[in-house]
Structures are given as C-alpha cells and as structure tokens.
Image: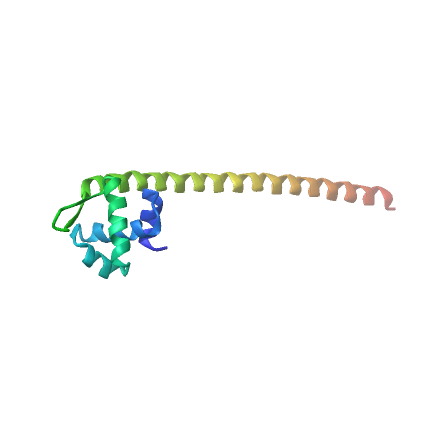
Length: 130
C-alpha cells in the first residue's frame, strides 16, 4: 500500500490531493512547480489541488506562490486518523477471535455428535454380537 493511500483514507480525499498533501508533509514549504516535479502531477492540476487543500484548511498559499502546509492541523488529523485505524484493527482482531470461537464451538458440537454416534454404533454391535 502506498502511503498516499493512507492519507487518502485518513483525510477522505481523492488521489491527487493525497499525493500533494503527503509531498507537502515531507516538504512543508514549497512551490507549485516543485510539487509538480516531485509528484509528477501536471502543474495545472497542482493549482486545482492546492485550492482544494486550502479550502479544507490544510495549506496556505502566499501571493508569491509559496505553499505552506499547516503542519499542526495536518498532524492532528493524522493522529486522529491513526487512532481510528488502530481501533479498526482492534475491532477486526476481536471479530476474528469471535469467529474462531464460534467455529470452535461448532467443531466441538460436531465432535460430541460423532462420539455419541460412535458409542451408539459400538453399543449396538456389542449387543448384536455373540
């Protein structure tokens, strides 16, 4: 899994914004041109994406074209998102344990049934024998 996919999930944003946000997280002060070169996203798309990120409060753009990531805001969102992922992982683990436990009960019931059948059949053979 690519890291930008985690950003995409945590921030609930499309692919390009996740790639640009990750790039800015690694280089918090940059220019659209530099972002375009690093991410290999066309500059026109970078400007649209930066507007999208600015509207959501994750970046500031100066009149001179410098883009600054709002590191504290982004890191807080990451922290909450990672805690959410951790909680989801715990939920999945618990669901797996429940499924294993349920399956174990079914297997034990089947074993009990088979043992009862074996005893019943063995008992008949003994009675039917000499």
